[in-house]
Length: 189
Image 1: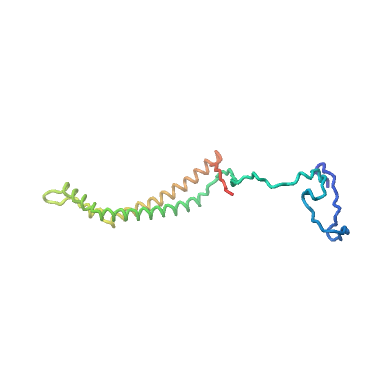
Image 2 (image 1 turned 90 degrees about the vertical axis):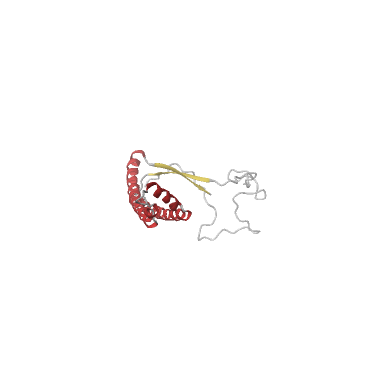
């Protein structure tokens, strides 16, 4: 096998004890652990090409603002099955909100007397001597309004789910041509 790493610097041997060997006898005196940088007390001179004045000092002007990491990502594909599931659940939630909003709105308008006032005006305008005219209050009763709203909500659920799934298919086709939507995400540290 050949060495493909190229020219390597000469190996500077380690003079200490190898694992499993006894260390060489140390001179008598206090033990001093090895240090990454020699300070002014530590022997002076140069070691490893650095002078004694090249001691690492803490930075005083360090940044205090947090660093923000950013990543540019591309949405290459949207899974139509997951889009369909999510859009189905969101459209059901929207349908329930529509039904509740219609019921609350009907109750508020009925409590304010809107139906009786407008219904009286319409029955006077459409009535004749033989008939009373159009009865708005019976036409816009709460059960009829809720039934109509429920039908609209079911149609919206079906349409929104189908359109979102179709949109995922169309996005996948267009992302194949142009590469998709690029997003830049940032993380605060």
